[in-house]
Image (cartoon, rainbow, N blue to C red; front, top):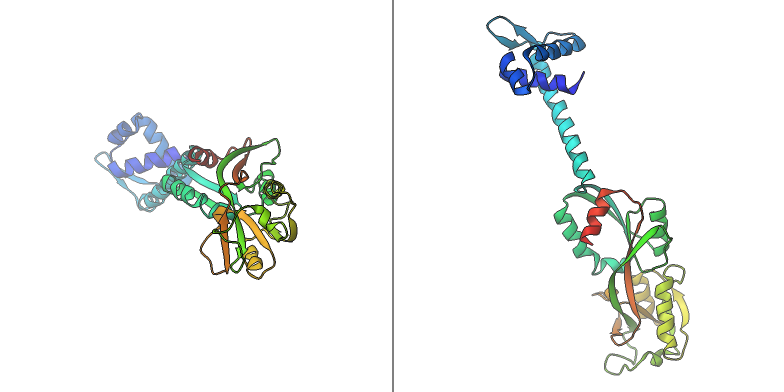
Length: 288
């Protein structure tokens, strides 16, 4: 059975006149007759009752018509979806991100993308920098948002967001925005930082920040999760330095000092595998 035969059957069933149906199909009348007879041979049933005066659907034809319409509509819809997917208007996109990217940068970007590309579904997963790189390598992530610029040669990298670093202190700490002078005030403090292996660039920025004020941070604890860091700071286990975007409304007894004057900033990078042929990725990169 061929789709063109079903299409010719549907047109003829709607017009019930061989000459007019052949004209609409841009076929000769004999070619249309051959297609209908071929379809009848394949199905083993006569689809039309023909006389010299009229053409009418047989019972078999009446039963076939709604099925033929469903098949043809499905074929048309499937090809249409394929065409839109190839054009980057539909499809699936897998996005990896570090938690801080979701605080300010990513939400408006995703909202805009969803509004402009309603047929592209995207899956979001919070991952560490190293997990995102593994995802890019194994094609389980199309685009990553990370705080590291150490990527393999086959990964494209783009800086998308730069922000200040921010100190996190216990609410009872003697230093606040009114008497803060420099990082030198915290030379004897214990620090709670992101692990070096998860965010080497970010980790190095903290090291440089402290080195500029004559000391190396004494690292007491490590965590990649902001709630854990806030809880540790709240309970007097140390102080921390975070991207300013992680500063948010919360119920922890901590306070923040944004390091506006510090030359060290933290960057958010987007990364994707060179040669990734997912059309949805190309649409996302245009918006990015």
